Image (cartoon, rainbow, N blue to C red; front, side, top):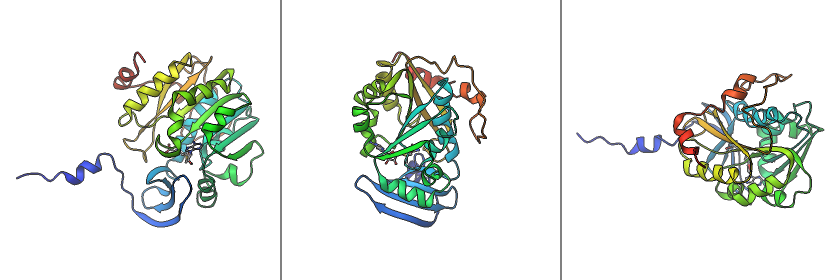
Length: 278
Ligand code: SAM
């Protein structure tokens, strides 16, 4: 008997959740924005049909995108976050005692407003107008092109490389990031799935290595993303995350710890091979 595999073919890349309630739905100039309450992951932000963050697992993504670069730099003071409309990255960044100023440039004010209302957990620093945080609604690509301040750390907490986020994965953008960093600055970007975005990861690693003397990829387990594993790529002018002595944070974290600071850079062979020679 012939097996009917049609449904299973979509299951491989898809993740299905049961929607209990749609809390917000709107169309901005840039994307379709939905916040839903789900059976499996609680409240979730979905942009153009792509799962961005959920109250179930957001701490993993936000702690790993913020604390790994901030603990690689010995004294991060001035930080820029590009994207990150749900507020989770600025929430984590502002916890660091050395950090004096966190600038956030998010293209879509409707994402910020929806998250302030329906995702209070991630957006607390934005809702409470945290004294370190300065939010600008604008295009992160244009901001980087014109940047006139120099940053210690830049965190690119962007959506997928389609739509408004596309230009955040280009050589020209990385050149602007390089220029906007201090002589010992570093940056990190979420760089998608190690399984399903290999050509993209290969290309951007090559671009970052052509500019930054140090380029390292690290991984975190993120249940709501396809494949469950997610890549982050760090470009640094001086500090190598493999050589820093991990420091203990003086606040509580649910995922990040000083052992993970080193071990997240240990890559499986297939990824080492993908990145070799680029
Ligand atoms: N954790 C998420 C993920 O990887 O799926 C990313 C979360 S965050 C919601 C991504 C944000 O990047 C979105 O709010 C989107 O509006 C913003 N964004 C996309 N392109 C941008 C650009 N060119 N400048 C600034 N923000 C941008």
